Length: 243
Ligand SMILES: Nc1ncnc2c1ncn2[C@@H]1O[C@H](COP(=O)(O)OP(=O)(O)OP(=O)(O)O)[C@@H](O)[C@H]1O
Ligand SMILES: [Mg+2]
Image 1: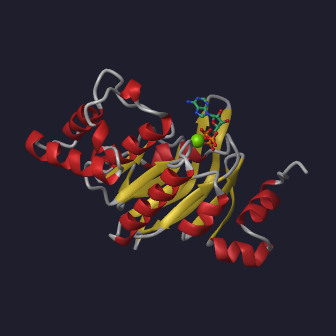
Image 2: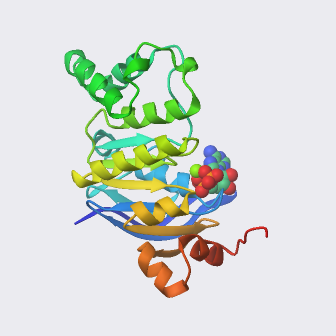
């Protein structure tokens, strides 16, 4: 079953064409990764899928609804972990989750126990009453993951979920994502960590300059182009590593 479909998707920011006529389908239950260099258009695609902004042209359907026609209903079923930290610095860790839960009409009684459960899940329970400004960067990332799960989403959108995490936290976040996937949550993510993309993603789209230049399973891409996923990425995007 297809959960997300983009057809002829274009996004312009003024004169800049950030997304240049892309098509893709994302299936229910899969982990789908958008890979590509800075500025390729990954975040822009994610923002259109979670109805943060509309396409300039083309169609994007999520849960068989058009992102421009049913944004509220689509948003209610999606969890979003943004690339930029948008936590409320004037609130504690716990309060950030409670306030966010209000957007989904979750009653306070329910959201309080849910918040504790989620803080346990991301190993932040001992920070529940701490203000956001006292968290490390990695802790903020983990809190953003907890917050994205508050409405028990069927689709999770994760923009660089593991950036800035230490190796232990990164490994633990990937394990958590895999446990969510095992419970039939569909995952769409971006990452610059090719090794992780190779391990976690069922399929990846490699983007460059607003276009999708390859879309397939990591295994198939490696078979066709040779080397590991990083070699494929460097070959397709025309980038190379300094010796
Ligand atoms: N709000 C905006 N206004 C104008 N231009 C924007 C805006 N957001 C993004 N862009 C431009 O659109 C292009 C794609 O940006 P986007 O954030 O989607 O890239 P990305 O692939 O997520 O990059 P990164 O790996 O750095 O996160 C870039 O050229 C960027 O400068
Ligand atoms: Mg981005």
